[in-house]
Image (cartoon, rainbow, N blue to C red; front, top):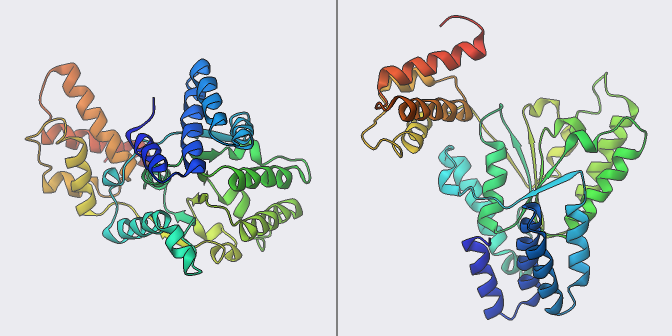
Length: 321
């Protein structure tokens, strides 16, 4: 079923007599329904889109993406208000979204919006979630590049597959997410980098330099130090994510637990004990607490939360806390 934002986009496109935008949104909905195995509805939507002017080329492009094993598509539901990061990172994401929404205005002045984004940070700090947020807030589908299917051992094949992905970036607007980006973006000067990997990186640098589509490209890495320095100037913005501080830890507990149990207020002891856990790990602690509360029919207490935090820390340290 179409999201509320897609319905609003359809109405705006109709009011603006923007047939291309209208077709794009209809095809996004069709692609999503096809992913849910609602083949009959997807086919019907595509036929309706085809009647809206000359949409056959767009339909073929959507079918190619759906059948492309290197890309998985989802319609995101994650909102910016659900992303708990520092004020600086939040404001920079807002800037990316604002520039996208006003890209035509910027273009009229010879300027372009930020649309090539690199996110660096430890696992669980919100990199993937951010890509989903950008997709939702822009009303675009999220296409995740499957690195295990992109990088192969055969000489020249990976570069050829990269070209296919950037052809999709050009032909079908969306948010294209390269997770574990260091798999192709490793520093070319590293001694252990073979010639083929250098060629792959050179290909990526060439493709991203030449890309002038309206799609948004988001690349994420756990370690920016592994990346080739030539990459950084190809991106319009670089976001550095860190482990949550006390303020973010408190907000995470309030967001997850207080929504389930309104009288729960995280204590300073709990907040300090949670420092060192990533955003994702704290969310898992909250989910465990909520599940225990449901199954035991008991309220969530500070002591139970502290126990779960201790348990989570032991999982990652391998030591008794």
